[in-house]
Image (cartoon, rainbow, N blue to C red; front, side, top):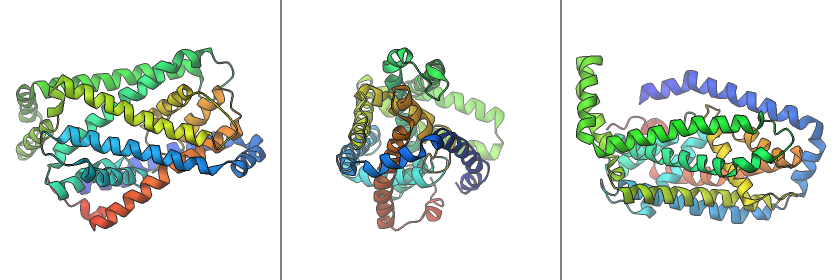
Length: 343
């Protein structure tokens, strides 16, 4: 883990900063002619609408805690109320550390609190991300016909590029889901295959540790052996992202524009697919430019779209980051200490 942190502090971190600066420069270039309207939109917004948005967002976080509890229950039953603070810590880690380090951080905290192997909990976290990606792609595909009919430049190279990105994303996420389903259904054969590769590709000193990690990792996929469990995880993922789109909808009412809930689903899907790109901590730039572009494609003024997207980004970032930081402080650990936890 120490090696991982060192890597994060080097090429991945700086690559993310460069990509974020590129997207922020793109936002600024489009905004400069409308800068006065941008400040007017910020000054006249009714920020009380953010409060119900935060409420429905935290309902989504609770649903995430329940989903993680559900995925882990065959390994160890951990109540949702105990999972919620750990999920919040993970959000905080993703928002302030690069390379989605919060996913590793919540696996570490779960290990400290419940004794569940880090590799097993990381397997469930990867499953979560795969299902999240599938739902995001569904949000995009449902709304692609409407986006295709829209006229005017969206600033994101047009709907064809979005369609192409969605197709490649589908290959990636559905391919990963298929691999994980096969690994979950045939764990013995999968472990034998890993052993075969380990014996031929890895130094002798690494083989035993690798096989132990893979065995614990496969134990984290046990929920995927049941079609009912797969269906439940998918439905829960859908609920989670509908709650998050609900926050988009509430925050929209603070500003002087209206688009459909389906348009906000599309925005949510594209934005979250874009944030899989490396970026500076907090998804700076990779969240903002795609979100603004989708709204502009729906006819929203670029100044209003930019002010809304920036406020939405802050409203998504600040409450859960603050809550996660509080829970981490209550745990009495720092990231440097968490990095020393072993399997």
